[in-house]
Amino acid sequence: MNQKFIKTWWAYTSILLGVWLIDALNPSTAQQKLQVRVNRWLEVRNPTGEVFYHREQTSQVARSGMRLQGVGDAITTKNQSSTKLALDNGIGFIQVGENTTLNVQQLQTTKSGGRITKLQVTSGQVRLQVRRFTTPESRLEIQTPAGISGVRGTEFGVNVQPNGNMAVATLNGGVATIAQGQSVLVKAGFQNLTIPGQPPSKPVPIRENPYLNIIQLVAQGNQVRIVGSIDPVNILAIAQKTQTTDLNGKFDITLPLPANRKVEAVVVTPLGKKQLYELAVP
Figure 1 (cartoon, rainbow, N blue to C red):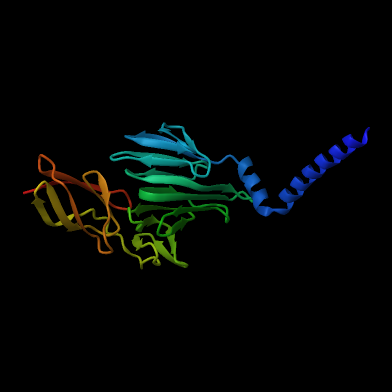
Figure 2: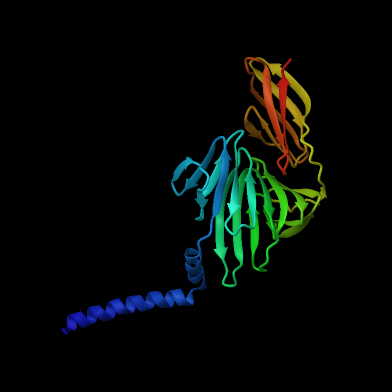
């Protein structure tokens, strides 16, 4: 065995040994490898309308059976479209409403068998039905621009407006809304609102009322001005575009006047109750 071969062999062996030591001594690396070995997913069920599946740099029409498995995998829905996502362990479902974007932030299984699921909703409405977890380490979180809603087993809904406002309404169990270092528990029968940059608001009884109060509806040349209000936890779409409301649910928008002088508006509650309105412009 010549001296050159021996030096090459030792150099190669040293590299492998160094990589092994880094993996062994770096908990985050070990954790990442654990996540790779564990096959976790969210499965698409019954997509209706325009629903799209995104992975890395590709997008395609979503079909039943497709799985969101990696960080960044996403589902988007368009107007009058929806789908359901089934959790891999059979513990529950996530109903994704129209005009919604949901993506995977983390799918992890701990050494003790706990399952950690972190999802991000940047806009739109989702409703979750999740059975109580049996493993203490298990948790499910919905992250939004305003904060986090975390559960261990419950039924609740989340609305996210274009400005990042997050509304949570709880039917069963309890949901912790977390923002600005503060946590507020939203118990069954209550709802609250979280504004980006502010702590969660105090919970109030669920109203579940998709009312639309029109204060002003006036044609201005080839445009129409619409002023009104909704429950601030609800989402408002006018002319198929999601609108932003203030802390009190008020809005003031101007848009092109349709030829038939009719404007369609839709109000959706955090739990998914929807009301359609047809506004006739005088």
